[in-house]
Image 1 (cartoon, rainbow, N blue to C red):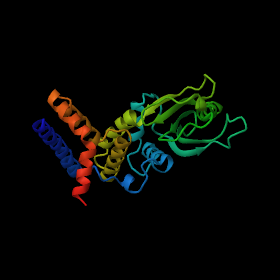
Image 2 (tube, rainbow, N blue to C red):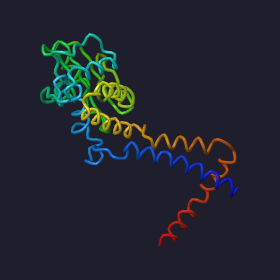
Image 3 (cartoon, rainbow, N blue to C red):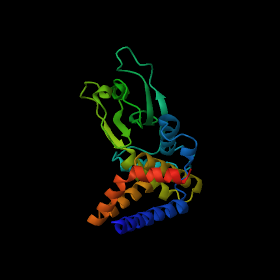
Image 4 (cartoon, helix red, strand yellow):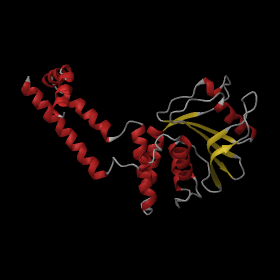
Length: 258
């Protein structure tokens, strides 16, 4: 059994070494958003970054290309990428007593004539507010705009009735960072080949999204180690032996480093 344990440790070490080399080559462990403590800031980081990238007049200088790719990914057709503005934290008035009007829309994409609008409610870790999507739905209805109401979360969960209210008229579609946002950004990154500063900023943000949605190289490494451990009975036996000896191992390491 000792030989099996040694063999398993060697295999796990090889996997760890491989991913350590990948991290060093790609610089994956460095992320400007993480360094600045902005990983989970919904407004300061995510809404602002997404709104800027979606904005045809954005400082990225890519024009309507990012918005065009986004509309394609979320399958919204016939929405123009010209004469369109993108607003972040758009104020639609004070929340009224009934809590069916007012609030701030995280990201609002609209044509200049306001006949077509897409509202995005962006959730990282925050919970739903009372009647939040209902209020945004009512605003779009009041504007007599073609409605597109997206509920963006890390994994694409559906909003609670606390947010939609009891109304069945609140049409919305869940989308996720894990799927739609990553797919969109990867396409934009490819098309931003002639804008290196923008391309690298997108790469940093993609790494952040992968981290938040458990799609980093560390997750892949864990899966590969799990595959090694479960590949045969000898590896499993060795793993459980080490697991049972965990406390003794930790104690031995601590005493050795005193």
